[in-house]
Amino acid sequence: MPEKNIQSIGVEIEHLSKRFGEQVVLDDVSFSVKPGEIFVLMGPSGAGKSVLLRHLVNLEKPDAGRVLIGGKDADDDATHSAIRTALVFQAGALFNSMSVFDNLAFYPREHRLYDKATLRDKVEHVLKILHIEDAARKLPAQLSGGMRKRVAIARSLVMEPQLLLYDEPTSELDPITAANISEIIGTLKEEFAVTSIIVSHDRDLALGIADRVGLLMAGKLLTVATPDELRASTEPAITEFMRPKIDVHNPRFRRLA
Image (cartoon, rainbow, N blue to C red):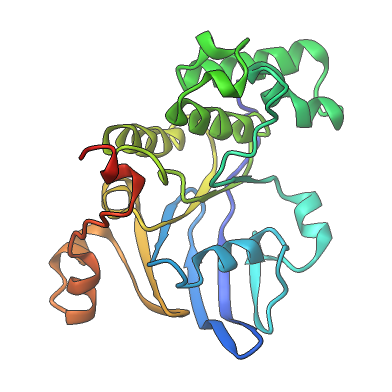
């Protein structure tokens, strides 16, 4: 079971700018994420979403501005030692030679975070929450794409993070499986004290589970709003952004052809 004394934390992005050579990737971006909130950062490919996410885990250094996690500078390694942060990678990043159970247990086992019995209980609890108990002894190669996404989420939850980051959690999934993953993410805050930041281009995910949504275009933050505010907006740039589009090259739609 989750530890009762773990609390979610807030995030502050303050005038964040980043460029690679002559290309401006993030241009004076500022917004905040409240403790316990599900915040979805939306935008097309190349908008700067994943680069911003990398700043949150100290994989990129800002050219200007700063990122604060729980009031502490994300550029400081001590922040990540003090605050539990987990990242669910787009590709899952599972160990193919390990069972699902051992994938979930690997990090806490290597870092001796729990005794053997406690670790087993935590892994089994997370497997149950995500309805993947029957996959515990299987290898990742034996799982569907949707199941592998669930395992990747489960592995992060074993750490009982205060901040959980998702990089395109519904990418490469068919619409029904994507909706299932979105629903799972949305229900997790009922079980865990966690703040969730999701980078995605999935409009249905953002409108379905987000407390608030940030729209990023060409490195600039267009707006931060609730799903209802986005639906009601008459701003041309926002209505154009929110209009459903079908990308015939997206595997999610090719499977339906």
